[in-house]
Length: 125
Image (cartoon, rainbow, N blue to C red; front, side):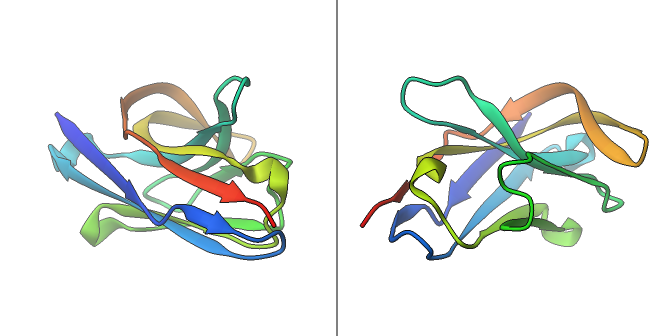
């Protein structure tokens, strides 16, 4: 079993920045690729960014150039630095971990095994 706990969400003005953190605990050998998804009101949950232990990544087109995913393997923690935030970034952000594969230099989940409970990010003036 793996437990994921997100933190760092909150209210920010358009153009502002936030940094989310997700700490994983439990069966460390199960923690491989880690990532962030988000779900806006009335919309489906969608990929934001993934990162493998070795540093392969994948970003949604809507966040490329604005968000950066990183991780500290020693701490089993993944981060999401969000810059130039827009109102459309408003959502509940969920951390997850699972098995993934690399195709063409890009990381893709094969299956997501664990989810956090989410942290709310609101971008509003």
